[in-house]
Length: 232
Image (tube, rainbow, N blue to C red):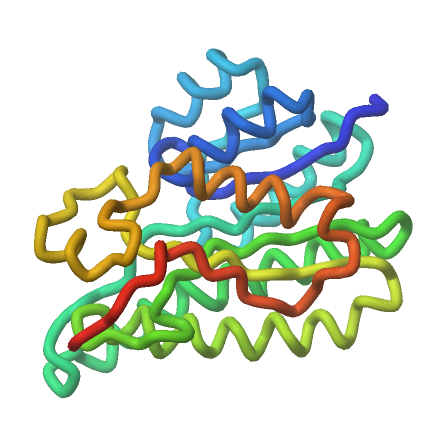
């Protein structure tokens, strides 16, 4: 099929779902993955391929890539979206919670990259990792996310240097607070735009980073936080 093919993980709700709906409008061939059964409802609604799996399971990631290849014959784009990492007071977070954060926020990208790079070496591709504002503006309210996503920034820069020669691009999109989760007035007052982002606005940022309009952008963080001031 001539249309571009994309994989989106954690796509049953929130930012992942919004990305799936927006890319569907652009006639992407989509494979959407989630640990929730709701992924099949979304797949039926927008006419794409759904698969149940976890971003922390290498076998599920490999199956998702193979499903994209068997269904559409290629792979052009990947949106690495995940769930949330453990939170808590900095020194009270357990070793297991730190390791869990690494597994869900960093290793998911490293693992799926092993499966998609051999495919993308042929024709290039674009990868967008949904990160968070804490990667550049760390917050004590989100300690594991801030630390691990800053590591993702380093990985993304190394990946861009290593695989740019094959026209494979990788960038991170860093949202602030988004309307798929509860946001207090106190938080809104800390944002210059005085509101949270809509998931569709974040999906528009993803569309840009996947598109030819960003063809010379790789290894970068695109911050979409409404110019937020972190005080803790």
